[in-house]
Length: 190
Ligand SMILES: [Zn+2]
Image (cartoon, rainbow, N blue to C red; front, side):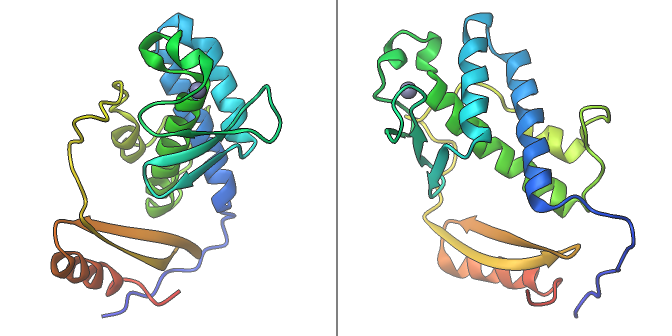
């Protein structure tokens, strides 16, 4: 069965606007969670992230731009090789924070887009969906991942007129593909 999406005349924020707002919200949330000595690094991290200085390679590894040396990138996953990483509380240098902000903002933006772009601005309350995605703001524990995804599949779907990348993860390919097919059945091809 194909669900026909309703057309609407209400202007919807673009994907990039939704992402930009999500990045701000995630940063605000992180500031409330992180100790004061990390706030300056968080501000730097936001600047790096907002200016496109974080490039994700898959879900985990990121290239993060140095703020002091133009054209220099740090390879960041659970750790960072920069000098500040050994001084920063919990090793959270601006580069690790920037990677975290981008990962979380991407999830939040995807959830909001999937949620019909519920109005979320600094003046409005954050949607419950978004809260759910943002909430686990505990320090990362890269040595003990909660969930490994040996299999995953990607597809593009149209949600409220937006092309959205959908990723389904699971333990084996048959399971992933079956679940992907189930989700795709609800959307017209992009
Ligand atoms: Zn660093």
